[in-house]
Image 1 (cartoon, helix red, strand yellow):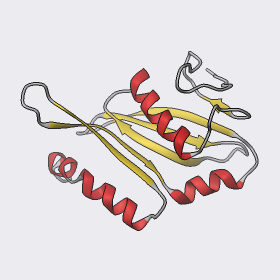
Image 2 (tube, rainbow, N blue to C red):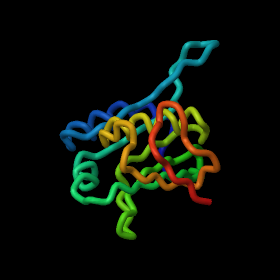
Image 3 (cartoon, rainbow, N blue to C red):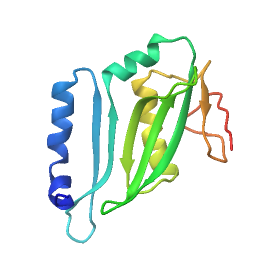
Image 4 (cartoon, rainbow, N blue to C red):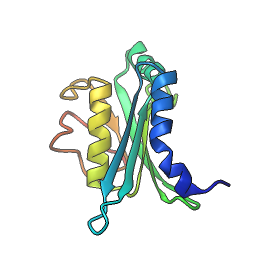
Length: 147
């Protein structure tokens, strides 16, 4: 296994490689700064490949699911995924790696998804999630939550 600190230092090269080899895709690196030293710290990495976005628009069902899972190992965090499941098929339309799963990281992630998929106000869209509360604010629309 490589040095994870060195690999995180290359994250902007990975972003550039994704955008260069997958024209029309979206890849965003979110970084913050430490208060004490001003060093950059990783906050999030978002990917939406153009081919998967096109596949989302290729069908007629406007049904997507959201899910998150823990990343284990040296680099802990959360993987957030939006997938299409309109025909019992999983199509990972977009995903992000974030430090923690909370209201702010989900809002950041879903705002990017909303822009990439041109969801506007979410009309005629079914959103399936295991979250206990219905989205409000920037993620408006008609949403269904399941447990």
